[in-house]
Image 1 (tube, helix red, strand yellow):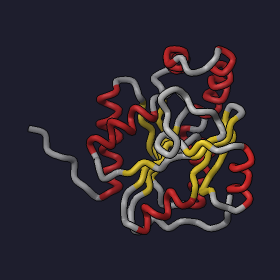
Image 2 (cartoon, helix red, strand yellow):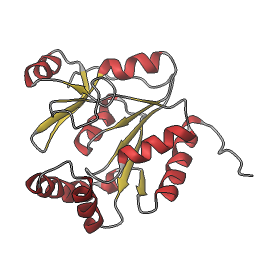
Image 3 (tube, helix red, strand yellow):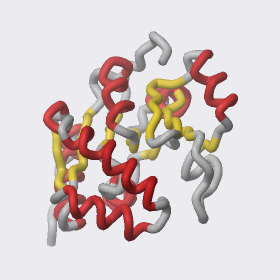
Image 4 (cartoon, one colour):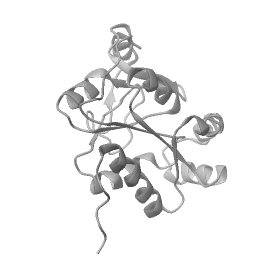
Length: 200
């Protein structure tokens, strides 16, 4: 990780983190329907694309060597290894949006969220928690994208991540989707200095 920080004074940077399978992606998609000016930072990863994923839209899919070059050049705001693959946020993904005054959301792992505290200290950090560890297991199995061994590895990491939720100023439990999105929207609109839209 490079030493340079990023000032988010011109716009808000929101970090959405939590264990794999907790529903971060689903929540962010619903959140962006409600707050359409919120732009999604596209993470880089060394994992292979899953069916239906698009280069540059879902992730920047990089080879191990490409990822190494970005790390050596200090071009990541944060990066971390997770279940044998590396993930990171390229500095340009944030800088371009921040300079233009556009709010941006990062969907990243807990290790990366910790790094963002030093590179973007005024970012709003939100931890997404499952209603129970068993719910998380069922969600990981149901999505069908990981082998049984991968599910177990992700659950082992998730246990340590769940213990870290006290580090985060905002915790949203993703039990009933609509309630979780409501809570997330309140946090984001408060960070943007916007009132909640009135309901009819």
